[in-house]
Length: 411
Image 1 (cartoon, rainbow, N blue to C red):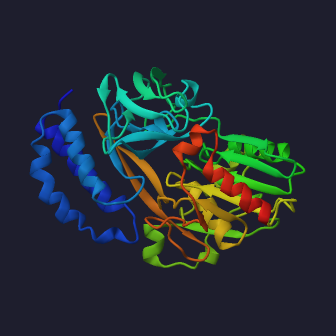
Image 2: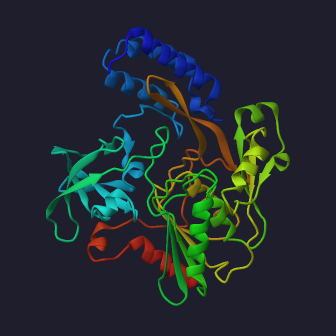
Image 3: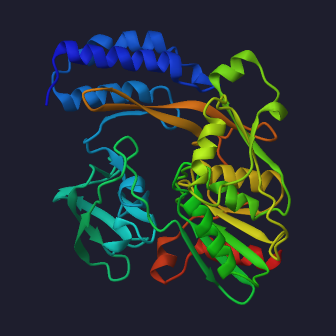
């Protein structure tokens, strides 16, 4: 439904106020928000079509160049594939042209359940050709037909994807199986973590516990965080398995706390994921009136056979909490990083309703490692850089995992 000029104006003005008062990026990337918003104001308000209005506001807030930043309608088709169908994509050259290649396809997600696998090429969506740089996006709960060129036989297949209705319209994320564990041989265990669902992460922490238990006896561990989209604080359980004692990880920092000054050692500490959901009531009461700058500390889970012989697999889609885990392991020499550079998307975000079903996502806190590194727009550079090879995938080989195994054996 199209909006009146008065309705568009109220939404636009609320977006401007929220960015001015809530948005936090310590670097700010040289953006003069007020000047930028005023320069686009007339152009945006002149958009009588709802789709054009949404696109122009989204383009405006994208100029902030921060993660967790966006503008959309609750029912609009702009949920990226990594969140909607639990699959990431990369550009792939085909006969002098480019296609999207499916890269990380997480078990339990809509793409995997429909038969899509890493190395498959996207050709069409609903009968319409899609090529980079146009992204593959979805709307909540829709059914869509994709035409895909399968990796192993090269033939084309039409694949129907049914997207489940997400539990939250403000955070429309589909959750795959978050944790998968297997023994690659008698000494190397593989723990793949697709995401860290849940704000506190009680369920995913238990999944990680079960995964580590299934790898009992392994003297080396590969943690596969490729395509990990992040999530809540559940990553603390994974970090706690990398070191025996309690170790400072890093801290969130709000705009208010930065402006008034702080000492990192004096920030409120969070160092234990509750075992039961009933504890959430106590947790909410404890942190309800605490300023949201929080210091994260590992849980102290004790010694493991694989300590000192851990490899982390990352790629350009390992974001948010996945990057927090990677930076912690790297800074404390707890793991060797293998893969490709991560994107540097690590700010803490919130979603705000701005009227008529529209939602504005903004970062409200920065994250710094204990050594003071800011990962936003910087990311993690692997010690061993290796890309995923489609030709190797056709042979049933994963070049990045092969390298991780070689590194693990040498530790």
